[in-house]
Length: 111
Length: 114
Image 1 (tube, each protein chain N blue to C red):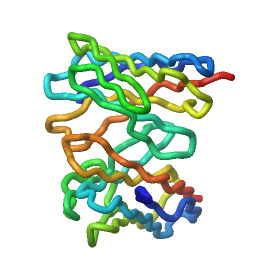
Image 2 (image 1 turned 120 degrees about the vertical axis):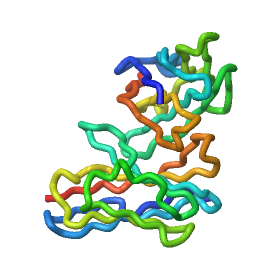
Image 3 (image 1 turned 90 degrees about the horizontal axis):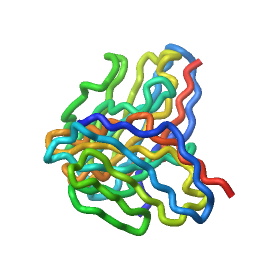
């Protein structure tokens, strides 16, 4: 899997958009960008994934740059329950489910 | 769907004892993964199964660790003998389509080896 780089921590005000960046400059053509989050004392939770195009689901939006070297996860209206560690993972092809979780970004949503 | 179910939720044992962690994957999922999480090393993949067959156990730290999947609805991770350095949160996850890396994780087992 390609290595990803994320800021260690970010803050966001409740109700505002949270934009979490991720760099994956060595991503290969068949690797997807996955985002998971882990709320305290829970298992990681899948959020969204994409290959080239921007993606949106009920939880978040994923913006991938045209050169695919970076991406941004957007939580449009952050709530206190979105406080968690967010992991950006580049995987696919022959990774066979071996998701490599880095240190992630600790997002703290403030009232 | 109840999701991935792990038991026990917490386990406290003494060094040298055998520990067995259990996992029930989501029905219909044909891949099962065991991960371990520590502060020092983060989340690490230990082993994964496809259709009850172990595919890759390269992440299993030592021979003291063993995992089985006797049927599609049950898996165990056993540590014998346990050591204090095995203290961690152990997660089980399952998925349906391998190359869609959408894993569903259980709530984990917090293991403390004294």
